[in-house]
Image 1 (cartoon, rainbow, N blue to C red):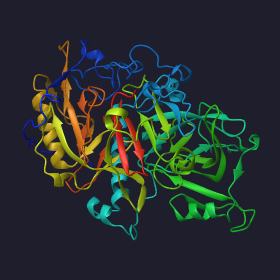
Image 2: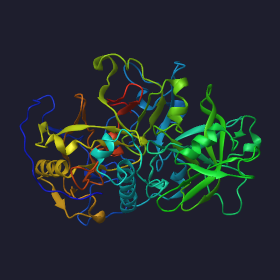
Image 3: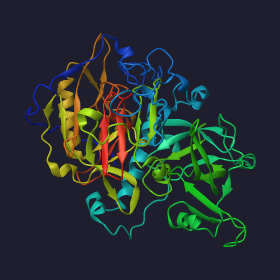
Length: 521
């Protein structure tokens, strides 16, 4: 669904000096500036990761840099307005729980020691497949505008598999499951609902290697399998994750099965179960519904399972709405060596003014037929403080805001305007030919530049919420502009996780809003 665009750009600087100008980076050589690939792109552009993505170009306390990220026990709670700043520590609020979040290929994640970090080309290939999946699922083969206006939400066949691979997901949290609690490190995903972990017993070749011990249901006093003849199983079967029953079909002794197929035909199947989920010491979720996977086929990479944060009934967010109220938020760190957080429950002062909470809000749109996704409406883009001349109709289909997609996909007209303005602002640097399959077509060689200046990119949403993307971590990937064209103007877009870095992103389905707080991690 990604494509390039033309170079049309225009517009006056109506927002004034407050957001005008270009953001100057710290006095670092290019090899220390670009957090994704550990250096500016060399004259001979490469797609392989050359130095890791642990260099910190920003200034946060826990943002990475040359040191190691903080351990969970070292992360302090946020102070003042928004959520758990600087990594989300302990909270005395019983209606709120926060856990540390890290990049899966960072030094604190289980895959860090495996040497399995993918090349940028592979990462972008997976990302493109995930983008195509989200757009197809969200629209059901129709235009996104038609899908959003279809209140009935039925009659369209949509794919049941999730993107190219679960391996495209990038951020993990560590939780406890069972009694006593067994530590499990799981990927987070706002584009998935049903959570799952690998479980014993697994036959030969039925489970992939992971860092933590496999969860053993027989060793937990709180584990229960869901019967086939239960309401919970019937609801699962009515959705996207039902997979029939074990034993005698429909009998009292038969167990409910779940099944998920990913886009590369990797699968996970097993028993739909309930268990005690420990978010952190003293904060538990009783009778949490999840998939206890005893058959996993396909390429999986070290993680223990997946935590679904989508909007459907099977997700962690929906299951804990009575306990934590429904809102949840996360902050994605600026580098893979940094620490962020995942929080269930509303931040302090989130109901008060923007000045008090530090949050700015935009209305949330939902698809009745696909409740998983959270959609916002982009209304404008500025580069260096100058609004771009983009017709409002270009944004009519909305933008899925997603934790698992890397690159932001914009409607074609919007991307063409952004690309032209960004290239103009970066004209002092050598523009490289498109690489990585042409996905990223605005890439630079910073060789010979002791300092690099990146223009501020601002995104404005309906309701007036405006976010200034953190530069360079929220703007560039491997020295390339972290945006792509989404084909046509009637295509639904996606806000990728690069643009979300360092922001607390607050999802509140009850109020129908998405909030943003800058500098949260």
